[in-house]
Length: 114
Length: 112
Image (cartoon, rainbow over all chains, first blue to last red; front, side, top):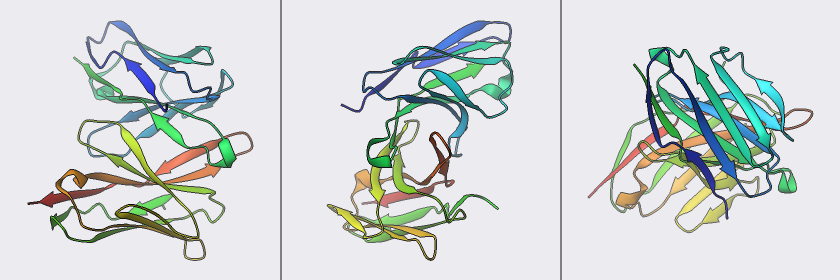
């Protein structure tokens, strides 16, 4: 089973709202990722958690706040977003079996900021 | 210079055609290589890993040339369902974990 789940599928929020995106995997993967993808562009890395610790923050604005409550869950807290933050937010997880570190993506949350 | 360079296409081919996508990467120390497929408004899905010896999965053949830092994907006997964007992806491993670098994707449309 290579399933990563994400909720919600769609989210519309105003610039003053606070919302959270959720991601879950039960594959025992120790690394989890948040990506942002705009239309017709490849995914852009935002954050990486390794063994529940934040390992990489790609200079993401503080209005995005990641959280890893346990090894299976990854959240992305959103506050005071801008319309240009509208995008598909993808969660991924990876193992390092054989050193290949294949990443598996969740279905994404399509976010619209008004 | 981008880590991964990929021809964005679009490629428009008839059913049954053979189509090839190419990709180059800049970091000679890159360790793992993949092709992902992304359908419109969906997440990227792993199509296949790419090995130096070349590997085949049904109608799909992937090749890696480390000396030239070049990756290819060949699709034979194209089907309508092959229409998608194909992402060339390279894994660079730091001290603790790997990080993916994506090409901009090649759009394929297979027409009847």
